[in-house]
Length: 276
Image (tube, rainbow, N blue to C red; front, top):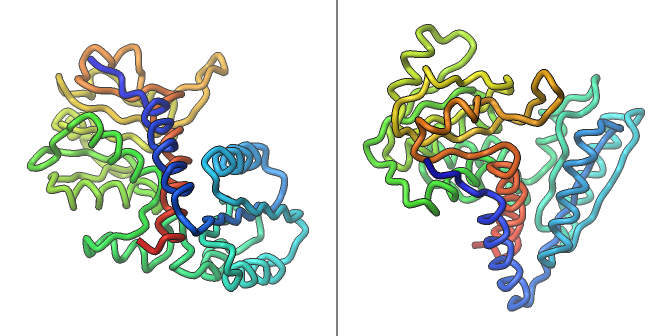
């Protein structure tokens, strides 16, 4: 068993991005919009702004009260869409109750969609012509690449079918020539399906859901979950202590996928800024 150190890889990639930015005549700019007072969202935004400062991306943070109207949010996004100093726009989700997230997201032009959530970017991924890809799945692919994991012909199982992680993750694995199964809350024989996986990715948000009897000997196990266990300790979807000795590679929580997600946001901002 080997633990994939997402924090170390993220640090290495941030150094490379910083060097690239320093050599460029363009100063990438990322605008982050947050609506309301959700504590978790505020922590995420703070970490994103901090990462921008570390590598030389100019950040613009806009905090709107939950009492803002849908039009006020969309007008702000429209103004950022035409701002030449802003190369990437991130609307922190989820929005407070009463807002139409899909409508708001449609005000982010595809060329500034650093989250990779737009219909066009998701469509390009499906066509294997991806340019900007959702940050968490992209970070996972970078982790697998860093460990030399050959995906061609391997069986991959993705737990979760969200538009932000599960679906783009499955498409990236498929584009890398893996044979992919997506599982969800309506899946039958879940344990048996998981046991076929050479690569198992869990993104369902259930603490320690994946147990040792669900994992094939020697599988690569990627844990996207961020949960709290019965003692309040941060943990993933995978019962790490039980699964680690069966896996050939496994990501921890914290210190696994999480650091890579924010790094990929920086990576995507550079793509949109430098028009790569």
